Length: 590
Image (cartoon, rainbow, N blue to C red; front, top):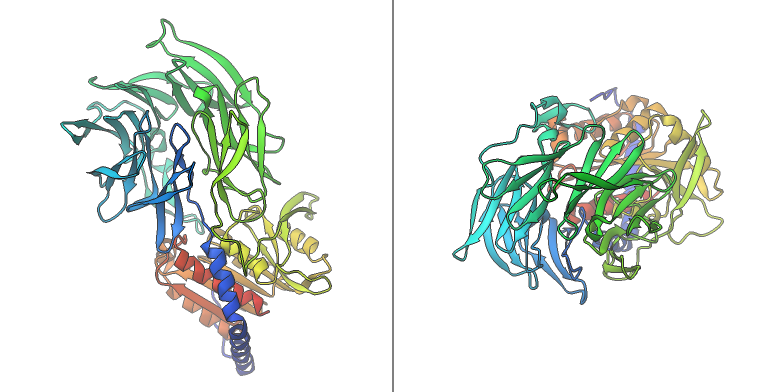
């Protein structure tokens, strides 16, 4: 930590105290309404990762943030009825049986394991203990299930005599090359320090696919492996040599694999007819995958037995779900006004599920029916209409930095905006994605200008600042910077690198602490969790109070909120609710 402690200036200290007292008095007058706004924002559903649909598209599993963490739900998409999955973890799905009669998900602590459930009622039929981390699974039949634990070990669950039994899938491990510990480390997002070593990612087993009731395939590094139950060891059936294998699927109907690869020219798909099914191995159906102009492809999923695919296209100015039913079809583009996560896409043969919002509001889980070409919301992010809070559109804008390069940002005006008034401006780094924390800014009566990510230099932020303050309703003397985690560290850097720009800052899960003697801000809000694993490595919550004390000596009041039930990433409505309330109260009293 780089704090500069200097002797107390009595006049500044007294002035700061009076400011804090006045701020609390004003906040108290508005607190009941502000609390209701915060409660409505946090009550919206925040979905975690992609949902898991059954093959028929009639049932769905998903995860959302709840009061004390995350929880999984079972949804009947025709009726909309929901049922909670008991003790589900943040990533509970392990797939559906071929006829949708069963599904599996992970049980969380303290009784970790795998739950086997009825596919129509979600009733738990069996639980199998498993203490290792499970990364994926696939059903071969109603009585055979293969899953991967520890990233490398495939395990077979088979049913006999009415009970489920667990055994190793095979005894001989395939040779995939030497481990490279440096290729897989957990890195502190703020300091760049390596804090742990994991298994080489090239050896990770992923994308399991059922070939038959007695055979399973998976990707491991750049190769596809196949194992027949009863064999001694798996066999390699294909390996990339001139390109990178990204993922694959298998179609029993077409008796072939469909591979998604990338080379220097871009991404493409093709069909592989393996020798173990056909007399000779052959490849056909090569098709280049071309995203919309200026976009990159993420999270590609196959549909229609590999004949088509869907993916998330991410551009500087938009996020879209692109669906291509087959090689002869024109791609269908579903553009979202509120940006979505790259791992939020799911699909079965005839349905594509995307998490997004056509307006800049709470995200829904949407079902795109490929045959009917219709889009339907199956799980709403907003259970009840807002009474106190509001969702405002984010307008895509551009600014030119000192080098003449274009910088994209999104500008939202305050809820209940009135022409002729001046409002504070908050600059952040979350793009246009809806989250309660960012939605708190316009609900606190501020403009929000958000870049898509942390830029490579502060010149881009200065460009956005200069462009945004040209708006006659923006008060250039009340500009804040806001960030969370790595972007909070960058925001703290900006306070020191460009001190003349900022009236204050909202710093969430902060790990980097600037020199307070070089800051010119009038006020700072900080919020962090006691369980922040990255903060603990740097010294713990003591760093927060030390920074608060150093700031006070520099005449800068710091409102510090330390959440006892949260870690670095807030996955709790209670913890996030406190953070959102603090933000609204802090910004609305300027």
